[in-house]
Length: 415
Image (tube, rainbow, N blue to C red):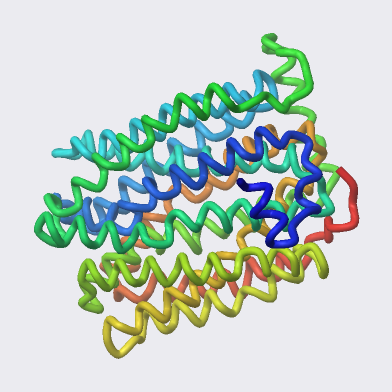
């Protein structure tokens, strides 16, 4: 079926895959799990606060999650290169299910903290491992388009999920712990049903023998450290991700709390926000990928940036809650350009180093951004709720954009 879809959309170049089976398995997983993971996505922070914890408590939990991610993600990345992509992916599947389960049974600090840690860690790890798989199976000249198509088709399933989530929350009592809790039960059941087929059908893409010696692990670390020393653009990218922590981690946990507590949004407004985000992202994903494959990844990333600033300002200064839907539509147009980041980061290193590169990036960027969620909570409570969002714009525009502009273009390389 997917082959006919590609042909209908005139996307035949993407069919030149190293592994069509893996592409279809990963596509199915993203489409299927994307729906279940997106159901509670807008409500996790509201759930924490509804149970009785404060903004600062939420910041502490998210900082713990960043600490755990900085430890787990490098290990998963090294496993992907040393033991194989599939074994690393298996670990991620288990952690992902546990995160949803702990959210559902959460009743105190311990279980809720475990839920936040497991969910946040698995979200980043799953994205990294899936992107390594995808980069392995799509050739460079159409890779940005390939990532875009993967994102496009996976977004089809999540287009209506925010409205379904709004209906469920509204049916079970509105925005509160009991209204949100059923979303996590549905999520854990859905993820469990997908895990075994994904594990059985996915084929290994790493063409090297299994290595178990500690000395080889040390040599692998030395190899990627050498790459970092030799190539300035890898160090620049690390800085892009480090400062990215103080753009996203200081704000993401508090977006929906701001929408509900400051702007007066209800479950249906949140639902329409999510739907407008997904529809806009769906419409823009493939065009961004094609632009990236035509003029380059770096130029296209910079071209999309103003949409982020505009959407944030509308979100903060909207005269009423209905304007938040427009803000999230613009945000969706911006986030559709994420496929360029996914392509670029994997093209900066040789194919055989992508797992280790993912691990080293996670180790450095996640460890340096550990305080970011807590910083965001203090900016909210000590100054004003708008402060973390405005600080994020300044960091992105004045630091991250110049760093991205300094990166080399990878479009014309091979591999």
